[in-house]
Image (cartoon, rainbow, N blue to C red; front, top):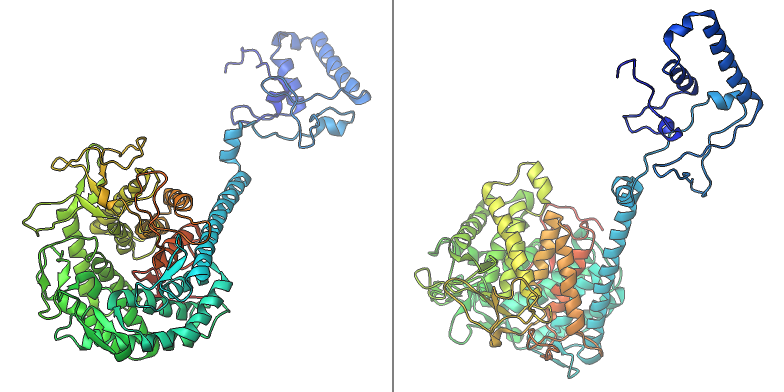
Amino acid sequence: MSSSNKSLPYTTKDVHYDNAKFRHRSFFKVIYQTFFTSNVKRTSLSCSTGKFLSLLLIFGIAYLMLTHTSPANSVTDRLGKGVKNSKDKLVSYGGSRLGKLLRKPPRLPPRLSPDQKGFNNSSSHESDNLNAGSKWIARQQSVKDAFIHAWSGYTKYAIGYDELMPVSQHGVDGLGGLGATIVDALDTAMIMGVDEVVSEAGSWIEKHLLDRITKKGQVNLFETTIRVLGGLLSAYHLSGGEQGMKLTHTGPKPTVYLETAKNLADRLLSAFTSSPTPIPFSDVILHDSTAHPASGGLSSTSEVSTLQLEFNYLSAVSGDPKYSIEAMKVLEHIKTLPKVEGLVPIYISPQTGEFSGENIRLGSRGDSYYEYLIKVWLQQGTARDNNLTYLYDMYTEAMKGVRHRLVQKSIPNGLVFVGELPYGSDGAFSPKMDHLVCFLSGTLALGATKGITKEKAMKDNLLNFEDLENLKLAEDLAKTCFEMYAVTSTGLAPEIAYFHTKDFSEGGLDGGNKSSEYVKDIIIKPADRHNLLRPETVESLFVLYRITEDPKYREWGWQIFEAFEKYTKVDTGGYSSLDDVTTIPPHRRDKMETFFLGETLKYLYLLFADSSLIPLDKFIFNSEAHPFPIKGTKNDS
């Protein structure tokens, strides 16, 4: 600015306001600059009269200010209004003393809009974080309340039975009569801190389960291993066994769970030892420890390959390697069998040890084979045996095969889904996806980062191109699985969905929610419209939230939980499966599966919990959501 320009028309606001363009200046500097840049010509200062008048003016002003109290001058904002302090009084800078004249007035912060305040104020950040935290704590409590409601229905009408039929209000034994709901729900109660359920379930196990095991007849090897054996072993660790977490101080001593688990496992071992090959028979007669193949002679691929986490952990805590040796023979044998880019048929023969048929899918009878490849490897922790690297290699090859042969996009909106090859690699592709396939999203994410956050994995340069591809597919599949819920009238997913592609389309079979963007992408056939309270989608949302830290996965989980509450809750206790998710009100199927308490509600609770509760880099979840500690990690209570 040239010296010939006049002074800027500063207001009191301008004097005290600092936004880096206007700087604070003292009172004398203001008088000085105002005077010496006024209309008084500089030449007039050279005469004695000019100097005299100037000095007289300055002393006169000083005298007036020292001998008179000046009126309070309120600091104005842009609208000329007084700025109020926290007590709603106008801030004023007048005074009657020289000290007040010379003291620099306090600098006021810039006036911010409410939006700016929320964005810039650290205390607002803290407040927002507290509010967000409170929201998720409240939602966690809602899930805990749902668990207590489900348990109350079971104990009221079906205690000791495998499952509750909540509508007709009685129990049913569909899993061998071992009180499967009790054992499945026990570690959920421990994690949630529902001590009364821990005490009730633990007491029942201590008094009755061993007797049931020694007297009962036929059970399925796979279902009994993942639900009952897995539940007992997880309860053993979480109640303090093997220097475990000790999440609870109620119920029996941890050794009760371990000794019961060993007795059960000794009987289940007959499925392995009775078979002529490393592939176990599917059914066990508990009371005489014998086994036989299923009718038709075949075992499911997923069933024989989803036993290893449980048997490995039992060997670790019991000190007896026999459990692990028998279970690991299965995977060692499958390693030698021919595959299609890592993909395998869904049936295998215990008699020949060979795969049977050509049907390749990641839904029922195929799903958890792929899950356990990576999880059994991860279970070994940092001291992983080099002899088990084949599991990671098999998993990596299989995921390449999934991306190459099974992944397609729907039309018109491009949902990514995993289809099937019912007639093998040379047969036609089917755009059918079981809800069970939704486990894959979480498994892919877990395999990519090994349980740590994506941010940490990226920062430490731990992700290769393959990992990033799998993580991207994991997020895309999670979106699709959520839309399978959102596309229906009830907001709950069907058991099976088909996807509209250029080669497949069926009209009039949408989910009923016409406002869904994907109503034309997802096809739901009448026979597939039931919902069994399955956990796979919320399982993947939990894993993805822990790994990506993206809050949308929590929001999606909450929407799903609200739909469960609205349409499956039975007032007298428990929750019911549904016959048709596309109609309102939906007809109830009258069955509460054990996995609703063991998996679905557990994963929802953990989704809304702090990530330090059962962290993914220290625990591995079996196929029934029972957490086991990863070898070599320390788990403090």
